[in-house]
Image (cartoon, protein in one colour):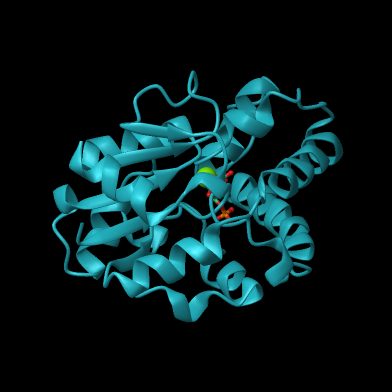
Length: 219
Ligand code: BG6
Ligand code: MG
């Protein structure tokens, strides 16, 4: 196992509720629609602009706004979201993650972040975890969002690792598909029925240990 490629939102910290809160407010204020609760999980792993377009489609307003207006709405959502994530501290790291990072470092496994979020460096700073990672792939630099493999390929390249010799960890269906498309071993965190394509699924981050990852890698 040369490297571990980490999703961030939902694996390192639980930000889905903040994304959903910000999208819900935008949808209500700017589009006059109420987002169903299912959007919280439907938008997991989906880039900001793709999420915006899905919401416009749901509101039946897909062709109503110019690209500049759509960008401005996505920016408004991000401003709301930044207010929430600005409050994150080390206490918001999901259970088991700090221990896992220590174990991987002790075993000389390189650590790379493969998040769709442009806010990943800021979130890692807030959590006090920035120094633990060898690299953060920049989603602005890849052509296609998850479920395409691009961000996982970039995350592996940034630590000079062969993607087939890496384990990826994801909480989203689109993310698991992206890991598999990159040729890496996929460990899913969450509901096995949503993450059926993963090589191994655990129900919570507490179960993510070096030995679970090593076992998934050897499978
Ligand atoms: C993913 C989240 O990690 O990042 C998505 O699961 C989010 O919900 C995406 O839309 C992009 O995030 P950001 O912070 O760049 O808007
Ligand atoms: Mg995620």
